[in-house]
Length: 120
Image (cartoon, rainbow, N blue to C red; front, side, top):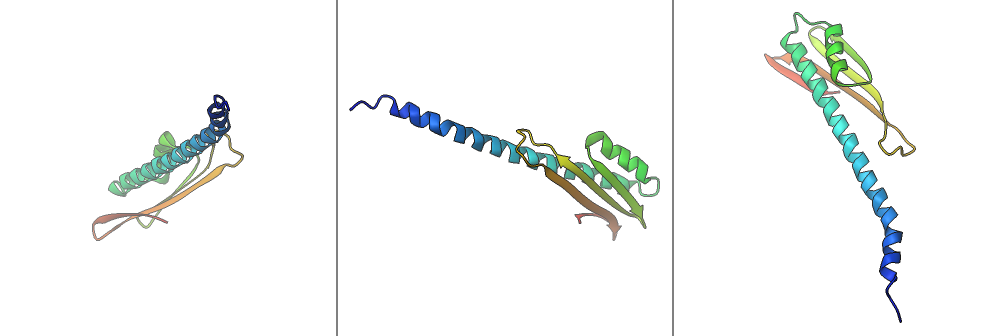
């Protein structure tokens, strides 16, 4: 019995499965990285707004966010509370047939001389 080609056949059968698995892992990692980057930018913008709460307006904070992230950005400032919402359709790198929706909302305010920034 000759077994020379069996390993090659098994490798060729398993290779597409491995490539799909690596692509899926890459996609999930990139999506997580994007969410993390958006959340960091939103928190930094709210922190900047709270540091300058008396001199800041919604347009200025919106422009700061637009320099670093994409999507539909809404900023509301009322009673020294800053609310930031970002919505975007995340494009997949490998064009799997679904798009992810990014919808992140954070609220920041000052309580007892301490800045509170939390996810809503």
